[in-house]
Image (cartoon, helix red, strand yellow):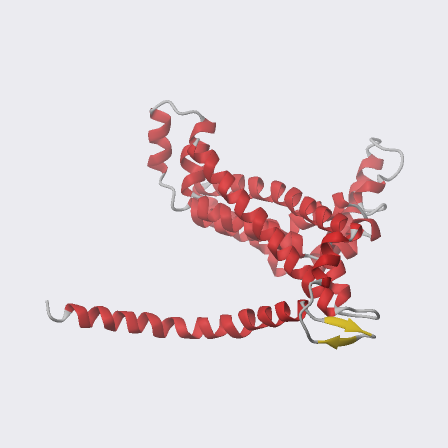
Length: 290
């Protein structure tokens, strides 16, 4: 009995020591840069020269400018649309890998992850080739006689951005959902069926609550990465489908850049994404309890 406190303190020291490298890495490469960016967002510029100080002018400009408001709404809309496609698709795929094709689950997972071995830009240009006016999809539709001329909305539009982002981010959403699905015993589903529960009831009361950590992670991957992306809108969205990430990137590069304004935009986007993420996870939790 006398050795129990010393044993616990020794385990606590080992745990603390194990956390030090990760904490240092997190502080050096995330916390410190974010604090610097936050401080920068309150500065101003004059003749392209940074002026230290404390001013809310950048945040006022972000919230009052019709252009930035429209870009914010478009960004959230595109991110939510992308997430609405990715999460249910990844959930259904993870369910099939776990319960329908259980013996082939690992093989299917490897096939899904094969797309990650190609470069990010390569996959974007692949979708651009598919969705282009002379791309694979339009050529196939014209060849079958379903259309007489190329569908222009397939490229350089919000539709193209959503489809491309969905294809890019789907593998990242499958990983946490499949991992969470592995923790769902088959006996739970069979017991629910024996008690007369329907498919929707099982989904709401068994599958979703037991895979909620994976759902939250999949939603975070899909929504946050889609909302923060600026390469995909540039390549397949065109000038009419730019997102706020494109404007933020422009503020840190090129002629007429404004670092404090870009920093303020970035933090406003982070705040909006965090609010949407928390609201959605609470909504899912409320639905599963209803």
